[in-house]
Length: 170
Image: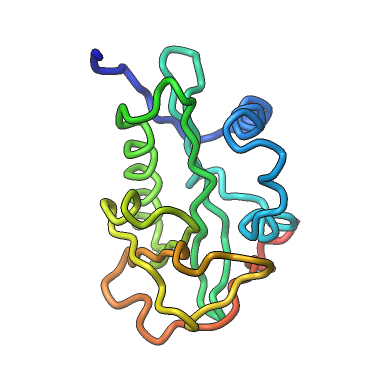
């Protein structure tokens, strides 16, 4: 396949409906029972750290980041990351990840967590959180709970409940 001409742009409020339709297509209605969605119920994702991938005017992917706390430590939760099925395995997800992590680091964030597949996310620095170190609301497969340090040593000594950053509540 030929190389895609993908543009990564900061998400805007105008993108909300198209992103929601993308989530419906890729994750289905079961997405609302996932633990990560429980964290998103009362705190909005950060538009300046959430991005869309477009080919021309066609939205083909999206990534969002949510302000959370792990115990008392501020962090970000990355996700959902989604790419339209015909454009998967073409580097779109990686471009979204790279941009979201680079911008988070540039804005002074130190930690990012997510629930996902370690073989995929380890390529950008995520690793499994040691069992028992953190808890999340609702059922979660802790072998899929990953962390990336944007600053070396940022996860040292961090533990506790993962919760929304209530200082950012709507």
